[in-house]
Image 1 (spheres, rainbow, N blue to C red):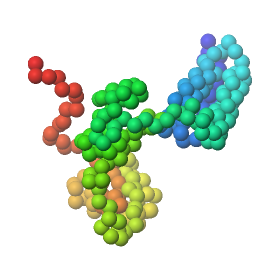
Image 2: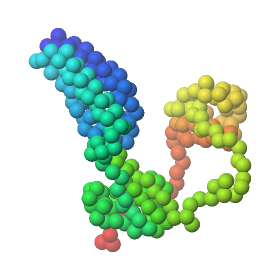
Image 3: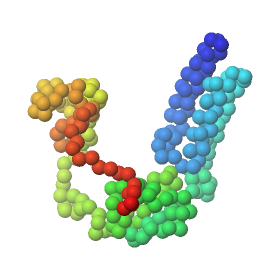
Image 4: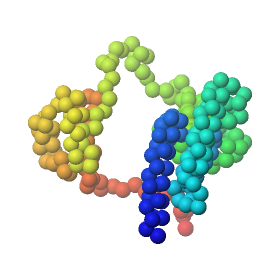
Length: 242
């Protein structure tokens, strides 16, 4: 019994490391928004790795070979879909228009098996809370939603105003789960004295902070473990008048 436990443990570690390596080889698409092809690949490779770790009735190298071959086949198909438009459309499908001129195209929505509440959720994720502001909404092959606002609803850009804003900076995380990331602090040309002064103004310590970052404008953003929120918003479904 103990011997089998050790065998499973070792094979699980090997399977895990192999999955990490092969996933890196396959690229970030495997871990981001997945097309049907990538989704099927992920399930199959995971299943082979699971069998590799736990099926003691067969030799480990058989599953390792299967995992390697399936990964190679996936890479070959990825290359083919890059070179052949027809096969690419067959494997990944086409984008589907589901909103046009502020109107929902119910037939396309039904064809893609998307419910109305799922559509409104995806619109909220794109910061769209009024469907009438949209010219188009397109459901991409990976399941994400792309939106195009009507011209009158598009935000004014610096170019429209003939302005020349300063170069953009990135937000830099400096505290995560109460732990200071000193290297990131130094990258923004700040030191512990500056941070201590900022925290002193807010009467908090590093240990009180769940997340803190230096914003592009050099101001400090802080989120505490215990947020003092007085008004709570219920995002549940409307239950009706009765």
